Length: 142
Image (cartoon, rainbow, N blue to C red):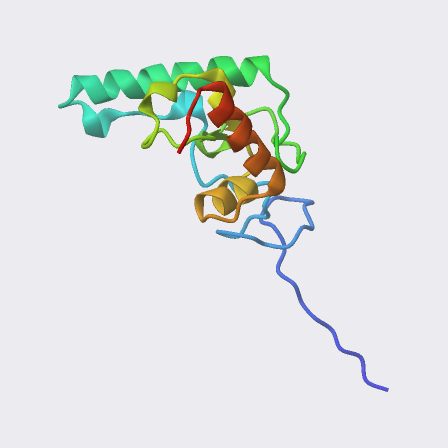
């Protein structure tokens, strides 16, 4: 009888035995983007309109974060207490519908997995329903 032992690398965080996901951290400790409060827009100082828009968007997202529960609105996963930029997704893309950029109903709070899947076009039934509801609400017939 042989015994197969698999050594799985675990998260770098002390006492965390979750499987490594990225950069040596598990999915609960890996933060690919900085918290919204810490984001700096210094690389865009030459264009004050863009900087102002980024600050306005950050403020908008933080206000939304304080109003809503910190769970993924698609799968229900707990998102923690620190808002990260990827938590916020425009249900109807801001590139196609710029007039809805600051519309609270058009923002979903999502986990990284759900946000990534939606961005890649793998859209859940729940999100499809939300898209249709928003199109109806905002009279978008395309």
